[in-house]
Length: 224
Image (cartoon, one colour):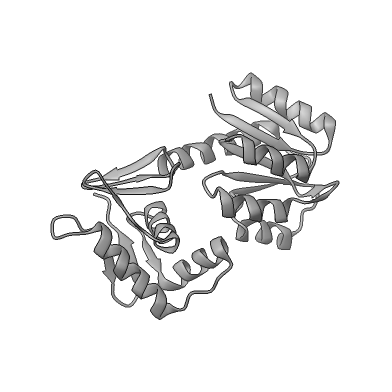
């Protein structure tokens, strides 16, 4: 059963969400503060987080940022009483998957949850496997022909980005921004090309090629 963490300081809303989502077969945990959220995310695994923007001991934006850096595969839906475009943009920039303004229709929220979980289960399943390559997303380990491939953290994140956007063109600017959002460290274009070249050398061979250069545009991960 899928586990959902609800971080919302309004007790009535928190318990109401728990009741509605439990009724749909989810396992929910309701908490009321940033500190509680940090503690429980370190100890337990969740499939999705519903996160209030304004909490008594901090804000949901900073919490989202820290969670995404540690556990990128957890989808996050923001709840907020503010209907401000700049807040929505900030949330998406931090890696949020959707943004819901209070008051909201519970049935629409449920539909959003289903759609997001389906997308993540497809992309961030327990592992991704193609030809000679296997990526275990839980352990963050890459295998080629059954043997562990020693990739650097940056190479691994580039690989994640490719798989997430498989069969789509990814620009160098997108990858640079993606890596910056994960590590808060800027990587210039030449360094990015070097990382991709090294990654290719580790996971590809003549019979197994995944990263296609789209000249004048960027790259594409080929998943046939």
